[in-house]
Amino acid sequence: MGGLAFGPRRATLLSSGCPVIGGVSPEYPNTDNPRGVIGMMRYMRMLPIFLLAVAALVLGAAAPEAWAKPFSAAKIIFEVNATDGDAGIQVFLDGEPWKVVKIFNPDNEQIFKVLGTGNLGMFGLTELFSESNEPPFEEVSLAEVLAMFPAGKYRFEGTTVGGASLKSMATLSHVIPCGPEIVSEDTLPFDEAIIGWTPVTNELDPATEECGESTDLEIVGYQVIVGTFQVTLPASATQVTVPPEFLEPNTVYLFEVLAIEASGNQTITEGSFETE
Image (cartoon, rainbow, N blue to C red; front, side, top):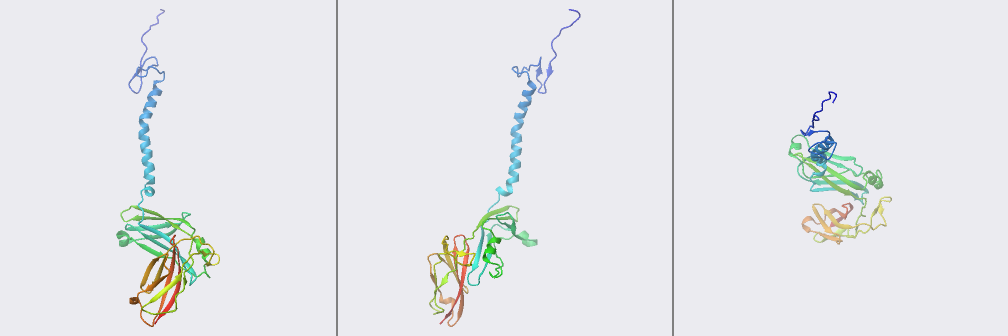
């Protein structure tokens, strides 16, 4: 045969350890691309591990947001004094002992921050009530106050002394009730002092700072404050009797009647009476 020697074809080993004879793998005899098959099998084996790693990264990044505990209370409202002609913001929150609290407006701008430091930061705070400055409408109009604090969702965020995240959302509304109109007398018997008012049915008009025509609101209650006497009444109430234990004869008393809207916004009317 002209000195040519013929012998068996040399086998090539794949990385899997399987021999390939003439380009055909005994493990995958129906394909002429065993290396591609082995590579695909390796990829398929690694895919679940890769997906688990991605899921862990996603969950880790979302943990502060998704796993945050809610505050037990989070509230932001407007309070208007119809007698004095001024308005301001009130904030209330409560929760597990925390060392820092922040509030963000609907545009994601931070508008409030409280930070406990030293021993107070380690001990923690829980309940917080705060109210803003209340400049007269001659200096800052009601429309300007509303523009400074847009209606919408306000985000309350905090960190507990243990490092856990706190988060709640509170809605601030621009629906503000008119102040109650007082109908009781200026002189009242100290043992039967009845303060009366007419039901509030209209919304305060920011443009005029007076009672407007809109009745698109819901009064949920009234609050009456006379010195140390304070009571919250249902929306159906139009009067309250001040217990004589809180009064003295021949004395002038200042009082407030607040109309409270479903949003939490409230408007005060101030008055006074003298006992006899």
